[in-house]
Length: 104
Image 1 (tube, helix red, strand yellow):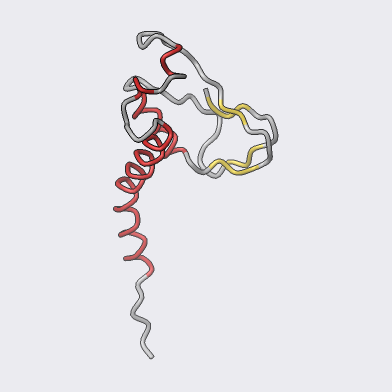
Image 2 (cartoon, one colour):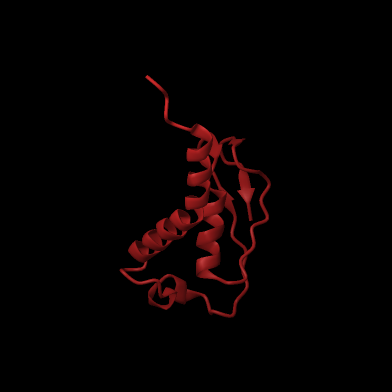
């Protein structure tokens, strides 16, 4: 029986689909978190900080793990604030130790 599956073609197809899937997944997640809308002004917690305030957040891990969601994280940050930036100390697939700060 001839193997008709081409792994390289499948990989290229999935790479092409990834950006739209990330956009969809982030939008769905934010919509769920924001009560069915992508309007951040409806989030009570977000309204505690004035919209024109610049701030810094620190992302840490409480357990050992592997960082593997950088594209999702950036899409989420950019969806919430157009001027978001990620100054990370690790790259994709970096092993993380407990309580390590890996992004600001």
